[in-house]
Image 1 (cartoon, helix red, strand yellow):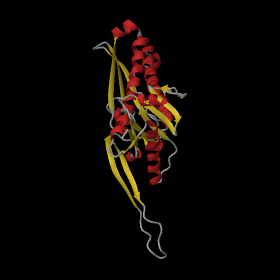
Image 2 (cartoon, one colour):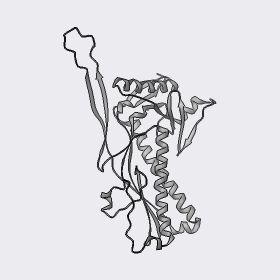
Image 3 (cartoon, rainbow, N blue to C red):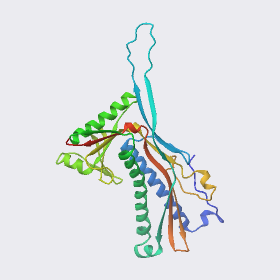
Amino acid sequence: MPATKVETLTQPRDSLPNVYTNVTAREIDFVTRFNDNWDALRNIMGVMRPIRKAPGSRLISYTADVALESGTVAPGNVIPYSKATIVQSTLADLTMNKYAKAVPIEDVNTYGAEVAIEKSDDAFLTKLQNVVLGNFYTFLTSATGRNTKTATTWQAALAKAQGEVLNKFATIQKDVTEVVGFANILDAYDYLGTANITVQTAFGLTYIENFMGYRTLFLLPAAQIPRNHVIATPVENIDLYYIDPGDSEFARLGLNYTVQGETNLIGFHAQGNYNTAVGESFALMGMALWAEYVDGVADVTVSST
């Protein structure tokens, strides 16, 4: 059951000034929009498995292989075992991240509350979302154990990356429904040229759907994926792990964050600080996109040699 915000009131809420209702509505709006964005992003990417983890959990990626013995066995002879090898490859902590934002009364006086508060909330939400995506791109481009290959052209790299992950998952007998890819946006536009391809933009992401066998090909700047690289992985290999910020254990500290929905990805709280005459906003989240099999991530470098 979703956690709810708990407030200690000295009078009925209905009798409180509208400012309290407005702050509560703002908190609900913030966490609802954040969750809705992630639902849409998961649909674009094909990630359908949000997994709730306990505070202090560790994320583990694996490499897996099977050394297949011959199936030709004489009558009555012992059938040799094919050796399956699964090794823990990458470890990372899943921790709570804490963020705060302040809007001074001077900004409200200059720009009005709608601009000073709502616009800064929008930017705050986008930045928090990008933290999770940025960490995922770093993992894809640097995790030890990735399947690294080379190709001579960008188009060949797209095909090779897809083929490598399909072959890998077939080897370990895991189903693959669709593959997603990640490429440098300049490489993509160099290749596309004047081709009649629909490039879409949503939530700060640029992507192409149903392109050369990929469910989605994300086009990223050089800060997130270097030029002459194509990365691919099956959608089944991507999980969204999260710590529920509405956990009742946090509330025992007197920290009550507004959360919304069945999958509580973020907690948000707003309040005024009379000491500094600012409106404070606090966000709490523990989220990570993660690949279960790190060798199920193919990173193909375009190299003329």
